Length: 87
Image (cartoon, rainbow, N blue to C red):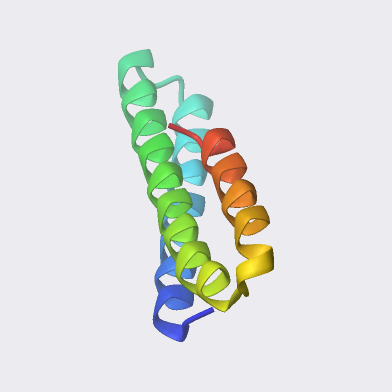
């Protein structure tokens, strides 16, 4: 994995971790449901963003490295991953 992309992914995952801890605290403090849902939506968007970044990286790294015989299987695998990725 390209080092810059790896750093971006790790940074985003740490941010998601912090957001998740924040939501836990909000629940413990009996904060308004709307506020909690707003934060959960932000977490969901952040997870989708990381998923897209990983799919892009997979396409660049894996599909470029496959030979002609394996390319169809690699494309099928990537499409399967895309259909299971959070939207």
